[in-house]
Image (tube, rainbow, N blue to C red):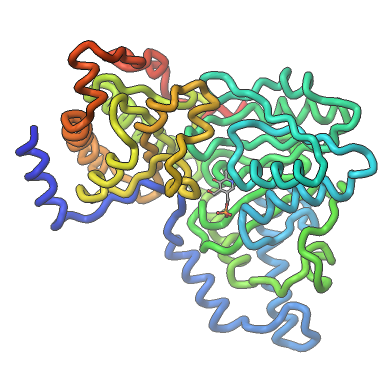
Length: 427
Ligand code: PLP
């Protein structure tokens, strides 16, 4: 085995790299790059200016807005450009907290949200707001009944993500949205990982606000969107000029807005075929990993799962060392969220699904994209048993297990939950 790994490490130097971290970010699509560079070259005006260059920029900005609105099946004046998904999340939560403070100060969210929501909620707690962080089940699912039970007289907002960025679980947001409707409560969903991967139409999903980010769907970094239902009162987050209907100050990034529109158009054109293709690759990876590597478990839901997400825990080893070895072998993967990969704490998402911290430490996230191929999956499946074996041989925990001093928490043949694959289940 060791010789084989050495051989693979040598070969990797001359092989193309495999990018398996599309949940962290995606490379801009060539057609998106083309739109963005054309805009930068030819449409430099300020959309607020009253002369030809300004009118042209304003026309291009509104064209991008209306294309996005039509793809999402919402009104143009419900689409607001922001700088990123994080800003959209901040705006939704802080804006609603500010505009509804006189009604109440209670917010409901979940334990598995991205830090863009969790840390915003924590910042609001410091300002006297009360936040309920809902539990999830072992697959990472939030129960709409739990949302209903948590609602109080002073609740002003529910924020539950559409799909989780680490384990890929797709939440029952339509049902959660309908609970919120029943109680007359605004519902925000962080749709950053879901947009471009599964069909998203905010109105059908009973969402009043949704956050999106360009760089997760082959547009550049530095552009996001907040969808806000018309009529919903939301305080500004960025004060300044009259841009974005006076809701978000700051000269608009016309080129990136146009790039976002192009990226969404391309994503929606290929949505079904790409989802099917990536699900097949995803399921090949999940099956292959579990079959080849003992004491390995799939994290997240087996069917209600993003088409591109694989998240597994290998018992008795560390995620960081898996990443380093995979990197040397030519694979770019992640141990969870890109924003927390420099932290040594186990993932809050894995802890929330009930994973013991020592197992959570040995987790790996592989996220596929439009460039992913069967050959890359084959290559990965060939090396992953070698990687895990090499690291287990060096691991004191593995030694303890072999000597009978430590029990295994994952059965040798892996979690049985993995047998029912093939879905992405946005209900
Ligand atoms: N929400 C989710 C679910 C994410 O996965 C991310 C990024 O990883 C964000 C929000 C933040 O988006 P951005 O990087 O555009 O700020």
